[in-house]
Image 1 (cartoon, helix red, strand yellow):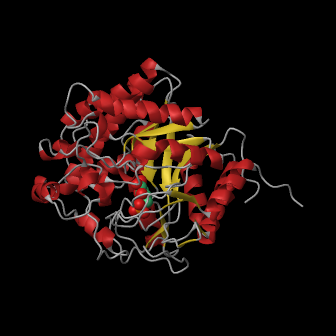
Image 2 (cartoon, helix red, strand yellow):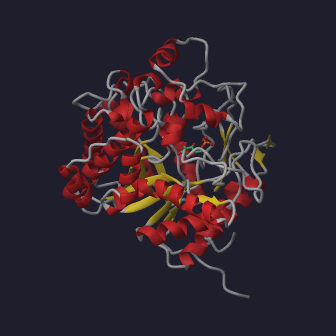
Image 3 (cartoon, protein in one colour):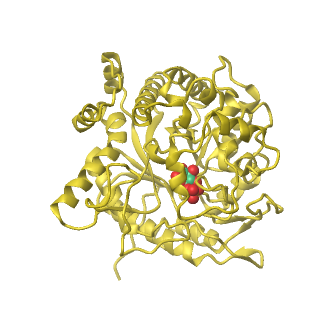
Length: 482
Ligand code: BG6
């Protein structure tokens, strides 16, 4: 029998989370409100079509004010899964699984409650002192996201979000505080979660309100340019204080398959793919690609890119590419437009209740394309299968999750055998947490079940699912026993 492939001994096996979906304690120790706190649970949600609403961006100054004043609605991200109080128990469970790395985010509004202060909130930092200490003591490499969908609200209402260059100053100040405090403990940093998802996230990742923009597309690209400059300034600062620090770009993989071999489909797909690579081209290669400058010109989009910006970007390219991968996307040149949210159904794939398809080959394809283009180390920063688990006899028999993860780990093994430098595999939500897109608790990804429902009822106690023992075995065998 052919010897089974073993992952490198220093491979990072972990899990990935975000503060706003997990911590809770939204009004504790001086934390300010953020974009995540105004996501209200909707019992009548259409699970397959909710993303259309995200693209339309329902948020305005008035909806923000209403959510802040609302006494009736339930806002799940304010409460998370109670990690703020249970982090010790949770980190111990991750350690028990054998994880040697853990991706989590720091909540910007804990450190700068309004976002524009000159001095950080010491109480907020003290919480992360404890978490980072606990993670390191458990033998895990911390991988820290600086900003994962939780912009302090005043940065939207008073400044208009990332389209305002003031945000460069505010976020760099925040990042500098983190690097000063944790730069000797944390090697891997991701400034922005999923930089490229602007079609769904103009609100939660760029901070643009629908009624605060006259030209949304232009403002999105201006905001993205500011985020590129922030990346570069963070990299410049990290180099100065500790050259061992690695700063990464993170994308949500949104590369596409052509529907057919019709040349129009091939070229259209290539063009749409390029518009996605753009988000990594600038921070990893240090300059704007020609196709993007042409696109700006032909579409009357004005982004001011100064000579000083060009030098900053060129001299401070980032160190690694992290990306999340959940499912693949397909394009039909006859039906789809250049809008990144416009996609077609792939008749060869099956999907979950939220319409997310299962396609492990798509992940192998994505890893390979990114590697061929950038030749920089890759982290699978998220991967997983959201499912409405059934809890029985103190556990969940989640063979569907094991199947999904097994095939995706095999895809990573394929890439490693090609010589691709994959550093880490970090499945999403190792402990059940609140969904980012829908704010449901019942869209679960975890190896560990959390006894809590969509309205926050339940003991919040943790239980090991079947997949817990399976992932433990996978890690112990360095991926050879799947
Ligand atoms: C990614 C986000 O887009 O997908 C996570 O970085 C999110 O925050 C994950 O939780 C899964 O999406 P959802 O909507 O199922 O939680």
